[in-house]
Figure (tube, helix red, strand yellow):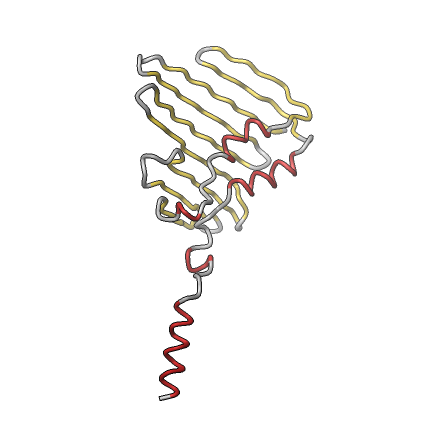
Length: 177
């Protein structure tokens, strides 16, 4: 009888333990906020390259020297889904091809701004991040595609449409040297 009581106690105790990240899925909460914080620290004052901005039909190209990309990368950070209350709002799928791993997070709710995130890793190191954000209201709709490749650069592509049908598009392409 003592053994039965002890076994029941251990079973109840074990069922009260919170699952570890591995049981939830180690990639469930990839933190864009943490990732870009580290990226910005490593890029601080070192970014050289070009920035091409296209707004509707107008284009401007700027040579960059000691450029601070923190304002541009804010859109990436604001797309972070690393929130425990959203665990049931996103589905995580992992695909592996040789040494490349692709983790795809897809949102289930129309209310969520971030619809999809693809994190590409080679040898467990991030090689590319692609984010799709979108929102619709009675006044406007917008679609934003963000792409980031460490040591190469990033692209921000935005399309906005008003209820009257006016469309504005912008594209920012930053290429690191």
